[in-house]
Length: 225
Image 1: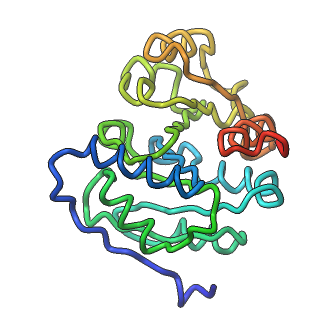
Image 2: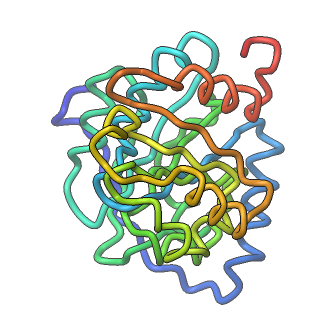
Image 3: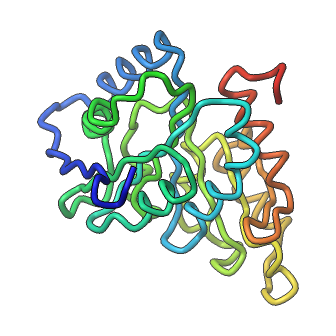
């Protein structure tokens, strides 16, 4: 797909009152189609896009996957995915700082890729609003980069409460920051005792294979992971 053909979807604000019920229905629909949807959340600059690019070599030979990039504006991230050979679509939220289940369904419908077994929704960069809305994803994954500091689980507990996976990115910068790993883990597990924590560097590749293996298992690719 050339850049001129990049598909951009202008999402309409949901008028549904019960987002949780809509999210449960969407999750059931996707499960019946054999599609695993992962909702990827974090603050801006934590490395959502770079993490997906680092995962690509481990995923592309084992599963058919794609990315829905959500932004208030621009199509930079979707173009980056397409340039790397990853099927992608750009979603514009029209100023809203989150996606809900109906907006996610609009994006999936426009994407039109029922052939994909794994779809990652790269949510708006924000540690507050995205955590408040169930998108209908099978898994919520959040990224915390070392330069952001170890206090984020204490400051934004809901994000870690609703996420099953926590990826600590930019571990290559640990020597340069005062990042208390034990404190961060303690605070994250206080929010969610079952949260799975992975330490990676999207830049060097450290830990990426282990994260990819876990995601493949989550998508039902145990024998290939």
